[in-house]
Image (cartoon, rainbow, N blue to C red; front, side):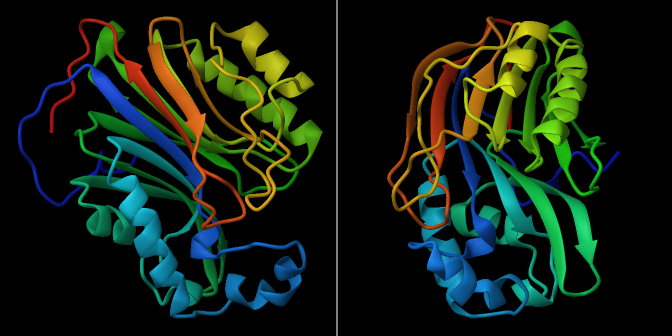
Amino acid sequence: MPNPSHVLKAESVHSRTLRLLSYNIQIGITTRRYRQYFLHSWKHVLHHAQRFDNLDQIAQLMSNYDLVGVQEADAGSARSGFINITQYLAMAAGFPYWEDQTNRRIGRIARHSLGVVSRYKPSGITEHKLPGRIPGRGAMAVRFGDGDDALVVLIVHLALSRRGRMSQLDYLGDLINDYRHVVLMGDMNCRSTSAEMELLVNKTLMSEPLHGLNTFPSWRPKRNIDHILVTPTVEVQHAGVLDYPLSDHLPISMEVVLPPGIELAS
């Protein structure tokens, strides 16, 4: 289990309202046409300065939220100039706490990772390696508080194959059922109406307040493959997709009210 979080600063704050954001940032690469996947493919393995101009704009958006789950970050490799992207975003956006989880390493070239940045201090963070025929998918369980009153935020990036997603969401269902108050967010690579999501909903008490929030591709969104789901104890005030096309995905946001007994302190 990793250190609960890296700390940049700390001050005491208590709140029951939580502004959430989930964003697949494609390691800071902007994509506006399908052909750019080919034309810009070198950016996935080589360092380029424009990446950080894009990340600065992403950080500006993130600064409006309390907790952000990031997919397709890099934990510091050649392609990112050996800069940890989650840490860079946390510092640029003014977040006091951050942590990342590397799920796949390709030598010195790439360190594929998930990330979380938060205004509130986690009481613990647990890394989970998700099942699948191709390794490299994971989930971060970020916990605030302890015991029955703990809030657990799960950040995930699921497999491209339906079979892989089924086994991963089955695994996550078992994990979710260990807690009362849960938020699940990330790039799940499947629609709200898919068999995979139906499996999760039937196995747990989780729900998605709005279906059909299309996030992909960012320049002409037709598929809702990024999601934020909550248990019944978490009250959703607002949810939506943001027109912020700095990746090949659009970010998804949610504002929730936490049940009494959960205190968030930074």
